[in-house]
Amino acid sequence: MTVAATPAPSPATTGGQSGVRLARSRRNAELSLLLLAMVLVAAYGATVEANLLDTVTPDFWMPAAALGAVFLGLHLVIRFLAPFADPALLPAVALLNGLGVGFLRRIDLGEAPVADRESLAVFAGIGGRQLAWTLASVILAAGLLAIMRDHRSVSRYAYTLGLAGIVLVMLPAVLPSSISEINGAKLWIRVGGFSIQPGEFAKLALLVFFAYYLVRKREVLSLASRRLLGIDFPRGRDLGPVVVVWLISLLVLVFEKDLGTSLLYFGMFVVTLYIATERVSWLLIGLVLFFGGAYLAYVLGSTVGGPFANFYLRAEIWLDPFADPTDKGYQLVQGLLALGTGGLFGAGPGGGQPEILPEVQNDFIFAGIGEEIGLFGLSALLVVYLLIVERGLRAALAVRDSFGKLLAGGLAFTLGLQVFVIVGGISKLIPLTGQTTPFLSAGGSSLMANWLLIAVLLRVSDGARRPVTGGGGKAARPAGGPPEQLHGAPTEVIKP
Image (cartoon, rainbow, N blue to C red; front, side, top):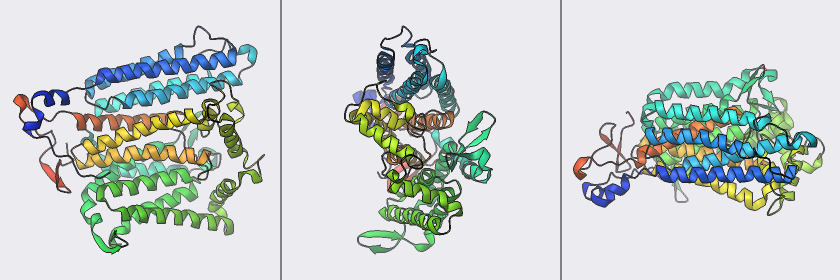
């Protein structure tokens, strides 16, 4: 994807029938897809009960109905506050979120005594808590849409958000392990019975800063010093920002003991840099820096130990989980066995044994679901994720200001990278990480942060799809000030 801005339509192409077509908001299509998604969630819940209870209770539809009411409320908010937003985003995310709630209820049923399963309250257990978190997340997303009427307005606070993002990233690393560490990764802040993962919100704040910074520095970062094998490489003096982010990602890797978060932060910066400059060399430099740093951490973990020991242990488990399948490699081995047991078609919703998987409600929910819906079902879920990423990238291509392009492109890529990191860890493609599967895993931090991400994508897509014609078929420039040039194409300044 490039950042070349799409020229505003001319008066000759925005009048008449074409102008009518541009003005369609497609909210009715969104509503239809949303209802279909909730029907699928209800069918999933009924199948789970049929396999686990040998009957379908009269209340099987209630979780889907509650979710449908929540998502319908957000649909109404979008209809009034972002009427031209992409109609596929909300239904796709609602389907994933609904299936996540349904699977967590399936875990509750599977862990309950057989005699008590049929009487288990619909809104009890992990599934009930996830419903409550969904309600809070959707309200938060709706609030963001109400506050942020123009995606460019957030650029005013780019430096503040950048500083806040760095603080949120580093905070768990400096806190005592008793407060911040879970399963070897220092990603949390736990106080009493409440816990939050600040890094989930940090990625959004840092992306705003990256987009703002790169809009202003793209010309400098695009300059080349030499050409090697047909690729233009940047000047050495311009490597500073990449090196700084690389060092921060290594600090996350070493002190927070989490490869996934480190890869996520560094990857989203390098890709946003590539979108801004269109230089493949930045991707190559980023890959060399990250894998070089990870290998260095592995070598130091095997020789020095200390803060590098945890990453070395995770890498050793990744290389041979069956060396200690009952202790250190137990989680990964069970995940691989679950995926293998599922085969092509799975055991059916409610027909597997995901309860024996450690952290199946969080890190390994993809493996637990995979046992029951098989390779074909998992492929369908990945296609839904791919659809969300594709619609985000489409919004980035269509929006008429460079800040919006970088922001939407970075958000879409970040979501895709997070899915890759967690699925890659479960399938033994890369070492295990502490990341959660977006919209499926239990927990409030990840769910709220990812719904905020979707809200920003909705706002950007609304700006991208909104008609640019004035009355009488005359071309009207969108609000936001005079145009500027980005790679030779007309766009707008990012100040609202």
